[in-house]
Length: 221
Image (tube, rainbow, N blue to C red; front, side):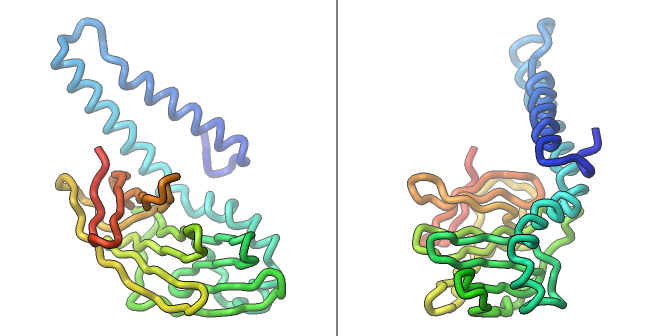
């Protein structure tokens, strides 16, 4: 199966197939003892997840191109007018309630007023860098209930908080509380229903619970 050339429905089929293979991989063999079965489950699950992450990293660019294409088409008039030379979109997040559009490129964050079709702010990200998407998940951009944006780094455990009203950028350098592994930054952000900020590591895919007040990112096991 080639997930680089499929449609959205095709990628769903691929995801279902990967889940099916994972379930098959973690089923213990009947001839094994209890301890051996546990080791078998852990090893096969780790190998399967690692393979999935490698596949995701290797094909992210083409998948991102398709995902961003819908946004680029819907807001092409804004991108063409205000960022014609900066079209490598990493993340695009519309805020329908406030009629705003957030567009992240490798070094810049753009905030648009979609109702007036104008660019409100162009923010140069401070001391910013990104790891190659072939080896790590891309950084993410998420909005909270107030419309405040949180931007992750995929290089280090660091978040940028951007207030849309003041456009002030606040940096959060987080202390990782986790098992020893190669995680360095965060490649996906999401708010849980209770408001907790969750993140996924860029390399090993570990899940973290972020506490901005405490300045920590604790691995969820």
